Amino acid sequence: MDKIKIAVVGLGNCASSLIQGINYYADKTEEDVDGLMHWSIDGYKPSDIEVVAAFDIDARKVGKDVSEAIYAKPNCTTIFYPDMDKTNVTVTMGKVLDGVAPHMKEYKDDSTFIISEEPENGKDEIVKVLKESGAEMLVNYLPVGSDEAGKFYADCALEAGIAFINCVPIFIVSDPEYEAKFRDAGIPCVGDDIKAQIGATITHRTLASLFADRGVKLDRTYQLNTGGNTDFLNMLNHDRLASKRESKTEAVQSVLAQRLDDDDIHIGPSDYVPWQKDNKLCFLRMEGRTFGDVPMNIELRLSVEDSPNSAGCVIDAIRCCKLALDRGISGALTSISSYVMKHPPIQYPDDIAHDKVDEFIEGKLER
Image (tube, rainbow, N blue to C red; front, top):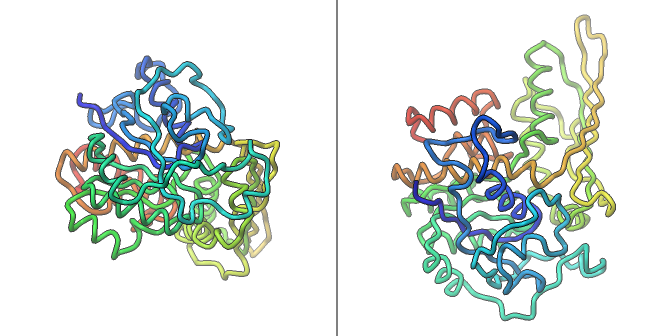
């Protein structure tokens, strides 16, 4: 099959895991593969994805081959595919805008971003790279809080006439006005804010659905997360967290039998612990009432390697987006967005979203 040609903005831990995974699964078969929700999506396998353009602003990545940049600091995720061949794709200097939080300058070089001295590229230059590379879609992996930068790259995708996959909590695909731009341009989009395969959000949603299904009244809940990657360091600035908290909170509220008062639900990043690196700890508590209004509670501790956990979802989003391109579908892909994103245009319960994705893959559902 033809390669699925993608461009990536932000060569951080998540992009590293995705690109490692594309190569890791290249010599696997359906019989011996683990870690994927779908081995084949209408014939497209993980190894059919090819990175043809990449953008970053870090001095240790700009100008380097993608195969080198994905292992460069401040990346700290697990290296599960260490011997990647050279891609002959050089990382292009992007545009900083609000992509780097000011407080990150106060931390060690190995933990934070070092802005390249290369001149920033504007929209015209970035669109030119996208067009010349032959990219069919742009995957957005910018840091949380990069609202201005995220919309800048969405506009670049629109001008280049390519699809857009928004993996971060910037409301683009779930914004009716922005979604209409992609629909009118005749190109698909997927978003917003990537879930993990088994992460804090999907676990919390599943337990919340279980409470509702079993007739247990949920009274209050919290989800506290800690980690040691640049994402958690970036989120120490709580001014950048509004959309992240809304995305994660709404993902849980949407599956409750009755929405909780704001005072009874707290979900969001809690602290930066450098030695955790890319390991994320989730501390979850749910308090409810069973038969006879008798109280009960659940406390859960979840430990995951954060970036590979989300890459398993992105690899499906990319392949579903390719199907939409093949089929001439434009605008938000609501099935895959609901299945793998925290803040999609339409929130379906996870089991229904799963079934809708399979129906979309089989061609029984338009989007």
